[in-house]
Amino acid sequence: MSGRQICLCNCHPDWSWLTFADNNPAFNFSDLDGIFISERRNNFLVVEWKKPGETLPEGQRQLAVGLASVPEFTVLIVHGPRSEPMQIQQVFPSYLGKIQLTDRDDFQRRARRWYVAANGE
Image (cartoon, rainbow, N blue to C red; front, side):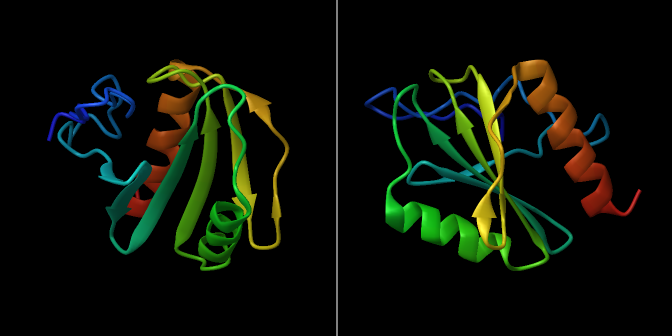
């Protein structure tokens, strides 16, 4: 899987720039209606992508917080134009974390740290 999201509306992020680990460049996200999930050794990285100015509906917030309450789940909210992360927010079991600035390089580092930890390296 290249990570390239193909959709007719051209609204889903293109993850082709993202690699989790040098030894497994094909590992990437699966898209479930705009929620992106990666699984590695029963650990899950869940990313909800929001366009600039788009808010997180209450139902999605509840889902994100609920998933984050499961120890094997890491949940992130990413804000930015298609395929260009600008802000990132980690979700914790009872709240949304502080919004932080990010970019592709920072997101790449975060994804690799998650992958290395999930892989037990």
